[in-house]
Length: 318
Length: 318
Image (cartoon, rainbow over all chains, first blue to last red; front, side, top):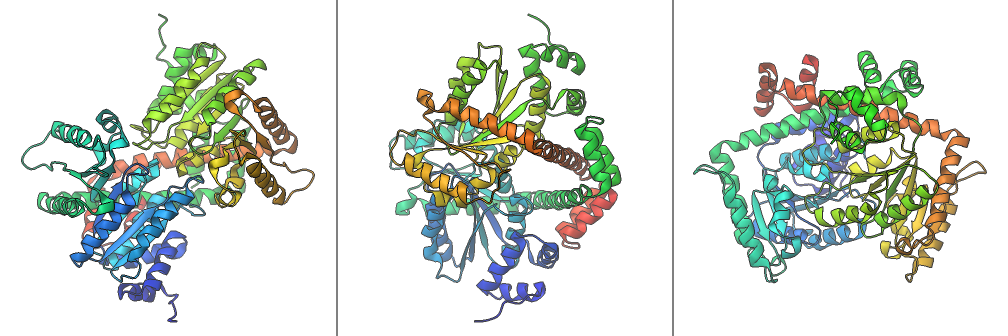
């Protein structure tokens, strides 16, 4: 068995050469954050910016994992290297089903051009959204062509994560409910491509029609992206190739329209906000262990001062 | 119709006198954050610290809302004023069922001693967890005896919210899965009281037995709290009174053991972290609109600098 280098630089080099054990270790080091994380990100950063980042969300049971599984196959046929980052909802009540989905995708695990990784939130220092951004940077820097970020979209954290994708695919099923709910839900704000999965079921055409109408209501001109609504049956691989082509058209649109740079800037701005927030939290934790910090807390507890006032005192000391 | 005062001080006074329209407005002002929020919290703070804060979580379908509904009735029989803060998962895919639950609870809406409020995350500036803390402060300051914070526990945000509760009730059903999953899930870390609801179903006794065994494995001495496992059928009001008594015993335990102050301190420490984080984000948003901030972002985009380096420059300017 080859050894896994401790040195971040060597570890990255090995991962970039395609060593999966090194890649896994690299990601773990990003996930379980410490002083080294910062160094790793700085080393990775110059090699980033080439990968396409696709986000995939939809209600539980819509068939996201099956769709991802099929997309992997079609991307492999185009000889693209594919990484999947699956975000597990952090609820203590979800474990089972999600793990099952992951196992389903593992049939690609023998393929050297595919890497699948689940990120959970338990036992982590810092936010899931921040870790995910940096894991995506790592996969980008280790030469994956397409990075699929899949979330169940069940919390604010998961929605924040979708912001890092350049193209967001929303997978719905006829049972997902009528279009009014979809609209209310603000899916229009995040979707670049819709898939109506399990489209052999009754009501599928109705949902396609409603989504298409809603999409048409968006203000648009000849330069704007018209959100396509694709009918798919992921379990039988029906419509997935067309779906992939629409996603790839959206990626071309981003490049041509100059929106890709905008998206990258937004990603980097968020990354900086995350870095600074994390640093702030670390330094605050330290402050509360000092005599001064404890004193402020005691005064607050005795109601001699109020929260915003206390925060101001703490930040003055900071 | 009585007018709702604009002035925060008057608004709070009216809400404290029991004016529900003023209370609703007060909470909205906290929820949709602006410069005034800070002032409102500072005004409320001296009157806080009297309410009991109970957190309630569990998987979807466990019967949390029904349990809450029953708890309200029993608390009212004790002449306690009760407020419910229901956290709606922020997923765009959940709307319907949750709203249904809220409507079910509305049968208490004619009761002046009960106030029910849902908090969602959409269209909000700042975190849900932060808003919820401040809404709880407002309910505390407006003289509610017990504040029930109900979450579906489906995301990190929702779990963070539970930290603000002094007592956490976890509602499970026989279908929730075996104890190993429960343990893995880390429920033991958050639960102060377990309810096995729908306990007329098969497997209920098995779950009760397993939970009781797991609870017994926790290290404990005569001063520690033994997590009770209660059998309930919320829909028929079976076991809910006993459940409430266990929660109230836990509250007494907190007072006697001195753990109440610890919990309050943790709450306040988190509140300060939230305040400072929110301020940081606001000031960062401003920085990125300046020439200096834009320059850093451009350099980052061109890879002349790396993210942590860029963050350092930004924070130096800050």
